[in-house]
Length: 314
Image (tube, rainbow, N blue to C red; front, side, top):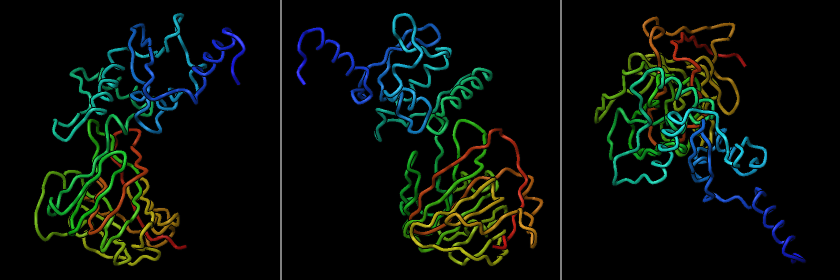
């Protein structure tokens, strides 16, 4: 309806400004960060989907957020920690293939780095500020297309091996999921840190589970591979859309929500070789076809983990 007078029109406009449906990504938000005033676009603060920061500044909660006496949104963090995070998000927003890639913030002071990582984790921004990446370490580079965060994935026309690595911190990956696309062959597992990484080889090669210091679910053969030793499992498939989940660094494996291998099984336990137990492990994938990596979870602490795996009786 049309406002009857100027006062009502002003009131309506004010309500619209406060309404979440009228909040726009290009809104300029005025912030008071630990006593320092700054301004940032809403779309910058909300660029990491699923983060606390994205939720807080989505527009739905603007009326209830803490503000200073001048109406600026108040963030109780040191500006010297918060500003590098915002600068990184701004740089990512204008990143192009022709320019050098944007790198995560760096600090010379170890204590300041720890404080920064603690803040990033608090805001749920770790996956965005320190993105997890897929890296080819065996195969022909020209035969594969790798997608980065937040839609990690591989399309490879030839058999190749990839590792899932973190950047800017040492927290190991604890759990992850893989959604199969059109695959001819696929092995999903873990390998000792630095065994595959940065050792790119072309041509024929052994895959995950066949090379030393590695183990995997061989979905094509339907079994478990430990350094070339094969154990038959039930429930494995390479059908398109299959969801495979690795939990706690290989302690538990699920296919479409059903446990197919676990260290908690009562019988037929198969312990990892001692030389593999003493090392930290990274997720690795060997295959030909397409697949996506999602639901990546990091360890709360950078600690080494001893893992045992066995066949589960369903």
